[in-house]
Length: 380
Image (cartoon, rainbow, N blue to C red; front, top):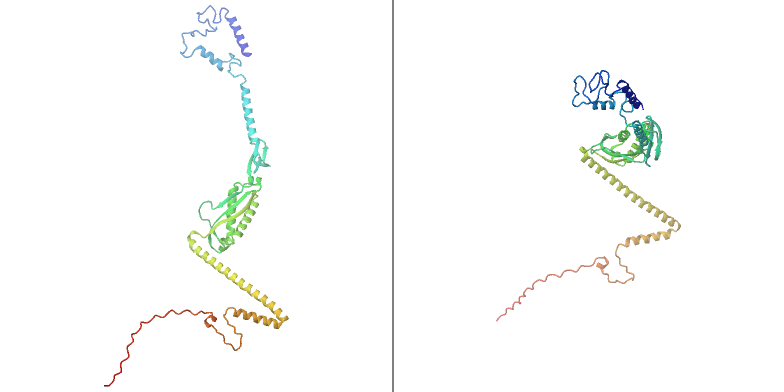
């Protein structure tokens, strides 16, 4: 409205100063534009013989003024070229961006195995349970999702290298083991430890070295592994609880406990000798148990016979005699002759349990020619 009023005021001034035409009065100037102080024809050449530049025309100056170079009007708003409703579009775009930001930073989807730790201006606020949860938008509030059901495993050593440790009896072993752990308290895990995984590994390494240092070589490579694993788990849990780490140690497993590579052959020989010695000891113990059990059985049997002998001595004595003779004669051949004064035929080889072997026929010698007897010599 201000622009239209400016155009109307300019028209009245032109009518009062130059009643004969909008481009100047009739006197004092040529038809191109009038005298001093009057408006000049915008389509004519400028006075004093100065021509405009080839590319700069009065129309260009007019458009420049319309775009904002001149004041007083030409377009609504004092000559500035503006899009109708431009500010409203910018406000709407900014509002849409704010709504999208709030939607993405205020709505959180927590998985069933997770918990969301909410911090308000960097300080712990609350813990979100699984499901769709709402918080204040960022950066006022932030949510860290923590998986509290995943069982994590740490292997020692990580690469295929030796992990040498010193035992109580000044021996060195190469030990490989693993540690299983999970998250027990989400807020402590998120705020108490800067690097939780590195902390768990450092605690496991120190606990294992302390446990091996209090065990002998035979315990570390033999039946003492179970005790070492339990000791390491107890040490780790105590240290992590002191840190308020929110970590729970599920178990420790020793996968390999051998001698270093430099003395591996000698170590295997010693281990084989120890195993053989243990096998011999077990065999001797088993034999001793059999002998003792047999002796205890015989003693119990003798006690029973003694009780019978006390009740009937003669009968028991005779029975024992018969049982003993039966046991002795059961393994020998015998011939019983009942009739007195009769000498039966006794096949001695059969009676002695030996059968006479047939003798092979003797080789027949060739018959010697018989010489006839010499004739007696007579007289005449």
